[in-house]
Length: 164
Image (cartoon, one colour):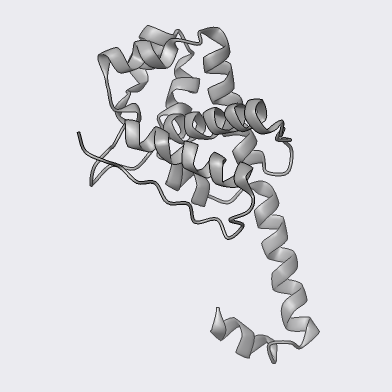
């Protein structure tokens, strides 16, 4: 048997709940390695986060509030809804496709009984989803673009624009 070591990047080594949460998220990825050329899906990332949050809540008594990040909330809502219908759904899906990020929309519809739109969302490449701007990030970027050059911290507007 091969030994796997998961290292945490958290700077707060004393914060055992944060370290535990990070390691549990990585454990989900280790259970379902995708290999080169594949990116984790919203299903895999959401499942990792959901599992880690539930465990840390149960063991450390910490709860996680939603509302500060609409994208993170949408991911957690989609995975929570999937698991609420059937706690064994991931086991059933992995019986047909062991790699979580390779679970196809059709399989989600067939096995989990979700709507096609939810299946498409869950099968979306997580990194691409995360990089797209949300409505609020666009508003923040516009405000920052107007404020930073005006405050003079980075020189005049033309100098500042050439730096970004």
